[in-house]
Image 1 (cartoon, one colour):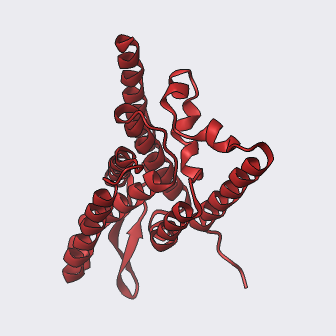
Image 2: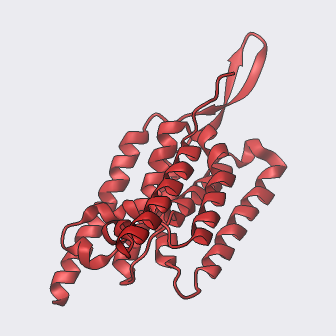
Image 3: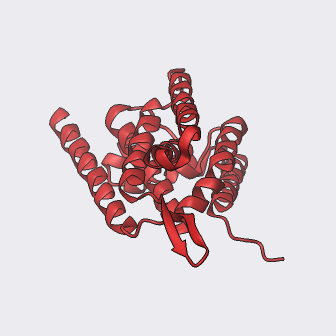
Length: 232
C-alpha cells in the first residue's frame, strides 16, 4: 500500500526533532543552543541574523507549547494541504511564519519562538477559502466561517496572557490572509462526458504572489531597521 507524502506531518516531525535537540543541548551545555541561535531576538536580527524571521517556527519553549501547536497543525494542516497542494501549502506556512515574526520584530521587544505564527496563517487561509467559495458551499459556509472567526478571536484573546506573542499571531494572520487571497485555490466546475463535477482549481500564480508578499515583508523589516537606527 502506497503512503501519500504529507508536508503537514513532516512539519510536525521536524518540530519534534528540533524540540528534542533543544533539550539535548540543555542537557549537554546547560543552555538551549537552538533557542539562542534561532529564536526571534530583535537585538540579533538588527545585527544581521535575518534567518530568525523563519527559524523560530521550529522551536518551542515547553512540551505543552509543542503539544498545542502540533495538535493545531494535525487538525487543520492535512485538509488545507489537500486543497492547496504541497508546494503552495509550504509557501503559505513559510509566509505565515515570516510575517508573524516580522510583526513581532516591529511591535514587540520580547524574544519569541513557536509555530503559532504559521498556524495563524493556516487559520486565516482556511477562512479565506471558505469565504471565496461560500456560494458553492451553500448553507455550510456561514457556520464554517463563523467557526473560523470564533477560533481566531478566542486564540487572540488567550494571546493577551503574559508571555504570549500576540503580535506574532496577528502577523501570521496577515501573511496567511494575503497569500490565501491572492494565491489560494478555489472551487470550479469541470465538464466531462458524464456531466459537471465540482473540482478544486489550484492557483497558478503562487510563486508570483509569494514573491510580492515576501517583498512586502522585506520592506517592513527595512522600516524596522531604519527606525531602530533613528532611535539611537
